[in-house]
Length: 390
Image (tube, rainbow, N blue to C red; front, side, top):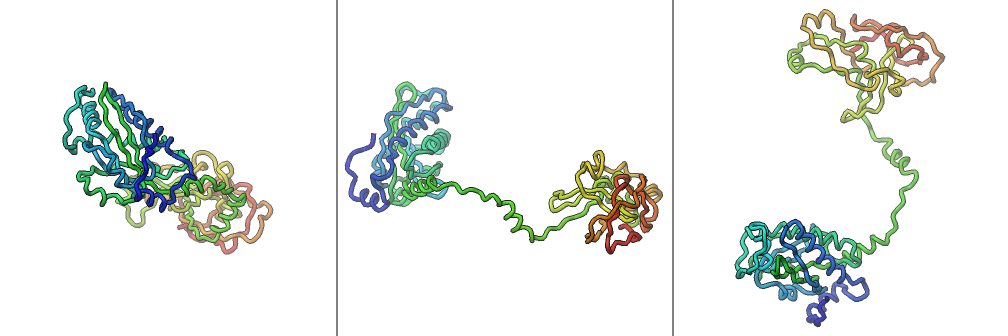
């Protein structure tokens, strides 16, 4: 139950300054049930510990001086804090410290209680897992407590060796003090004291956030985003083909060598941005005796793996002599001016042949790709069909 003893004058002054009153929800019941359930849950991984908490005593809005008076004289005392730096305290009396050490070293809690002793770093390390589980479970159990004005999540800080330094470590502010007797093993009994920093501002912000209606996303939000981002510059790279070559062959390349490719290598042209993001796909062909790229989905621009955008590795690398005798020049980006006119009637259909090899400066005839057959003539201003490729 809650402590009913009158609070000292300083405690009442601090509570009044921080706006503590009886008008808001009373979280005492949530603190009691939350800590009790958290202790039981934290003890589950420690087989044989079997922690059984008694009723939790809650003191709301106490001062640091009052909280220090309730700490056990011996055992583990450590600072706790949240992600914003608000600090509190946690204390385990020495019977609980010894029980946690025994359960992890011998597998059971001894019936005989040992005399109190100074806590070592090893003792602290063996108690850390239990305390971490306790804090996680407590945060989960009290997550929806109305009027919660303590941190959502607290973590273990460090052991306090000199209790006389607590006034320097923690500010004199309002705290919630939770004190509970815990029985472990057969009949070993100890105490857990949890001192939580209190901030009424957290309760007000949480209440305001719960009452604020959710803002509906405007129906035309996509159009607004496109309008805002439309003028932003975007660099696109036209990739006509890709080849995969052994590293040794690439390092041995010299000026004048040729890279062979098949007609199928040019059936998947992509417009790519940074990070190889593909914006559009197409197929290289001819239109009215001129070079052209037809954009569209894979079903329209090509067939097979090449039309789906699959990268086709180059065949096994031949010798330099074979490259010079049989290779065709690699294709470079083909510039094309934007057509100001609509598409005209169909004319000059393409044949089913594909140019490969030969003079790279020679004009391309009407037989580039079968996918270009039947495409209508499209005037391409400023385009020179006799310009060399590359």
